[in-house]
Image (tube, rainbow, N blue to C red):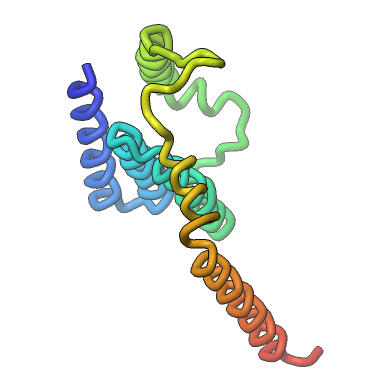
Length: 174
């Protein structure tokens, strides 16, 4: 079962990566990139690297990709031949793709529901089967590597102050 899920994540990642390469629409490329990043996060989960999976989703999907999509959507101009999406019943009269969307959404729901039902969750009070990498990383950052961790934090703070100073000094006077 785990091998099937692994191969499905590989297919999702590679297929959506090829979608990023082959599409000419920037917004579609951003959505394919979303699927690629989620596939990589799934592979991290299967490899037992839960910290990397959460970081992948929080940083890339939650931050960078949302910024790209907003940038594309806010800077996109309407072409002369583009259809007016604000017209009533445009979706129902012009595109019958809602049926395919319903089939795909139902398939995704059924796969996620069956995975949720078959999952073996650890109850509170019992020891987990494996030690979380988040716990290990947190303990090591606050014990063994506390000095490099603090130095990196101070270095990032100095870089942020320097960048904001440069941005404020390069502004033209009003």
